[in-house]
Length: 261
Figure 1 (cartoon, helix red, strand yellow):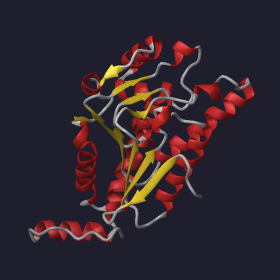
Figure 2: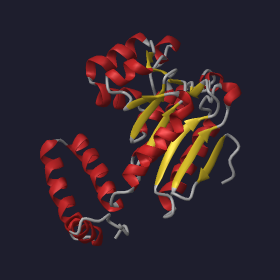
Figure 3: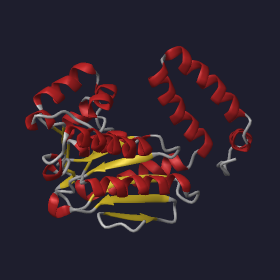
Figure 4: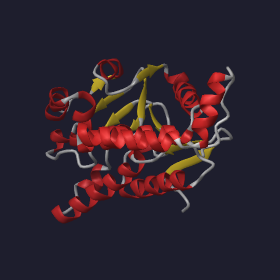
């Protein structure tokens, strides 16, 4: 697929940079943007040379400032449900990638923008970022996962505070409540994201993927089933070539050379 609303590039380190490229619209999520994002996330999943992803927005004002309100205003109930399901599918694709991702939140992350950021593995925000779910101010509720991911990240009380007031929080407050993992100067945001990913990519790829999956299974299925999955995944990881290489490297006091096998 050729892209009209996003930019896609991958560097030699295996990090893909996906940029929502509608700065004149504060990178608002139209239906066409969502389709292109889903394609980009599929591409990341299926390309063995890509090992991680950064998602961001063009310009310095907004990561993604929400949905395209002109589209939302014209939807029937049936169309609105389908619209929400398409967005949920695209964001779930990002969330379930077996590869780590970072949302580089450069400015406003509102509505669908925050929902996109919450689907990433971690979130790093610029100092000027503002994050919120203002849908109730428009007479609607979040439709791309905001009511589900926000309480999982910050707890029920904090999530309801944000969801019911519709008021955004600053980057510093988002960091304090656990909505973002770190805050960085705007000029250094992508560098900080790449630096974190470089640490992750130095580890065994299969172990990283299994650890991510184990966390998600436990959160969805509960502690007992999560522990069962963890034990099984531990057994799988212990049988890999990377495990043998990692343990040998530790004993030999050298850097491990993981092959993803």
